[in-house]
Length: 140
Image (cartoon, rainbow, N blue to C red; front, side):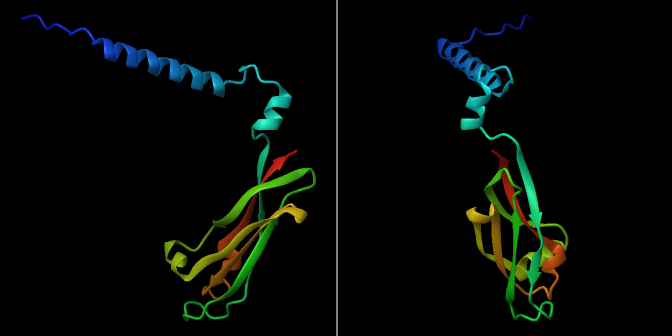
């Protein structure tokens, strides 16, 4: 018994052609030889992104007592960089820590080229070692 492979329908042929054209365009856009100049990439694209980190100050004195106190910190971009985004990064403490701290405010500080984060903490000062403020900086 011979097994025959059916011919694709015209709709399937058109869909496959559209798929290959779309994938080819994406590959071309991500290649380094896509024809854009340095000025075009500087104007529209994001080049030279760097993460900058800053420490936090945690004013809570007793861990997990149910009394939340203020914790804050900031990360600053270097000269010649501008802040794009930022936030908070957990570097220690495990998953159980998350229920004892929450972000109140996270915003850019344009004049200082940095990112500011404030939180409520019930970690007994441990936010200093468990979290970092993060600024995503772009070279100009």
